[in-house]
Image (tube, rainbow, N blue to C red; front, top):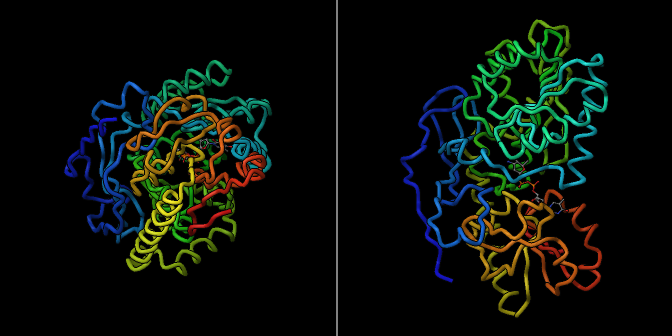
Length: 422
Ligand code: DWN
């Protein structure tokens, strides 16, 4: 097949010169993963010969507020207008959202018909659990395809981006929200200040804003470099976020660690003049971040060094077993998997194909590397020797469901925190 047309977008385009949180120009770049297509830009077969835009993927840290962030901002409409990632394909995530809804309800005992708004509501999975508890739910999501699906499922969803204007419109039409949630969304947002102003205006005086985001300490400790991609503009830690909330008279009142997505923080925030007390756990997170030296360049330089070692070891191993005539497939056509394969230049020369449980992704091809994606039944019927686990955050669930593959001698290759074969 003719090599596909890679069109590199100039690094001048979309480049930020100031911190998206505090506007400082003291940005220290510490890792470049090269140029690659957007991570959920899956292709139809007919797209394979077309030009494919590759955008710089580089991460830096602001030496004023210590927010880790991308150096380039790809316009949101390119990434989120038609979105193929849905959490409901994974039992782990459905269970997680059920527990999250229960946690929030037990924390603040909302009354029947109180309004719960989910920013970046995706397919309405989280809201469906609030709805079951007779709360009034409203989703907001820019992905038109997902908003349509959610409305069909009876989860009222407004297609669009949440910002200050949207908040004013929602407040006029639906009133103040007792709960506002945002799971795996805040890190995707460029104009954090408009979103904060919107939350300030929309949150009921005794309401809670509850966000979840992958946690920077886990990303660094577990070398989760493949979670660095164009959708994730920021990499969340508590100290910079605390400064952002304080700027809008909001206060973090509790933080609970979660295991999903390689390590996540669930952050509870309220109006600064509300009666919520600040849980001692909040201070523990801040001191842990000081202990981990998140405010020193060397922490990030060390991480970048480890990433290069992982890439070297992975490629060395894959090329060796390929040379021995072994067959290798990929498991989980995830955004992080697309970063890994593009960064390590792994294509169909190494992986025969990738299997994935998401109907939207099957019979498509991965962005940049053009690896075909099939349903998971292929794993059962095929005689692959190895499966490169591209969705390592679901290792337990995936390994459990593939007993047959492993009884037949199949092995999983896991890259995080270091290369291991199980
Ligand atoms: O921030 C984001 C995270 C939360 O989710 C989004 N911007 C994009 C997305 O990233 P991702 O695509 O890396 O997420 P996942 O959830 O790690 O992707 C898992 C993939 O693995 C999905 O395509 C589904 C697939 N899968 C599978 O094929 N079989 C998952 C499970 C559990 C399975 O059994």
